[in-house]
Image (cartoon, one colour):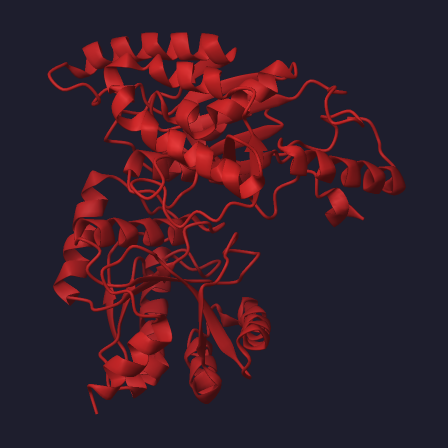
Length: 204
Length: 257
């Protein structure tokens, strides 16, 4: 996200829920307010906009209505590239976000690249075999700061992401990297790094 | 389940790895040392979105399991209610359920219907709980289901329902994903093992053609090509490709050593 924003691209974080059940002992409404504010701070650090899709943490659903509503919401963003969760993930909300995005991608004629990312690999994302890597050495600090903005939850997962970034860096030959699976069969077949670089050069 | 020493487990694991390379995925205690005679009857469950999905995705593998004396149950998430033009849901369900019985007879498998509706399948906490009970009742050692990246929503639903059950049920079953109509339906499928179905391809074909209402002459050639190509990849005439879920139990019992 930070590298895209640095290239001059517009980045939107679309949150499927507001993390309503993510803080033990707090009621959903209070938690949603806390976590929405954290999302706002985090997106500010990454220079991204943010949108909430209004499903509820831990209770996300996939059905005809949800597919249509999410597709309509994503369409209003007019994306050139979509990043989302890999669908094999121990968290049902991550799976829902992934398949809602994939369904939109199919419905829009695969007109934009669809790219899957990983979170807490092994514990959450599973069966993930990367096709592409992005060198994030230059933006690691901002990523870490953006993650730390989620103060209510970050302690549980940031160390694992540090390990993942180092390992993906080994694979990609740089200090720190994020790994992705680029969905085949889309109309735009440029590799991820080329896609971002070329698009960046067109927005000096 | 009997206790196995770590040394014995390692020895058995290496034997089973060889057996798997020869063509059939099995869990730790399911196969004799020569790779043919089962030492314990396994319960294999195959989950598909509609009648004809399990048969086309892994019918050859199902027949190989039943030929070895293992028990196979096929769970159909729907009865294919929306699958016959000009017929009501009830009429189509009746026709396709009858076709399921014929296909399962050919494969020597037992059909189970999970009660969702073709074209309107849902994922929700209630649906996860409902399906978990269906699968739990089968007490599976091995489950095969759709790969989740698939253009058909019902296939994706079947896949996620099984995966969620895998996360929650104990003991964990071995989880494998199969492919259907690759490219058109299953996408982003990276096979991790292959099952030689040369000996059972005829029965797979017959089971698929039992689904007369689905005009198998129009889509079976696609699967025939897939089976031939997967055979080329693994060095036999016909094969089915699977993805073994990485954290699933299976022949890689080395994780316990």
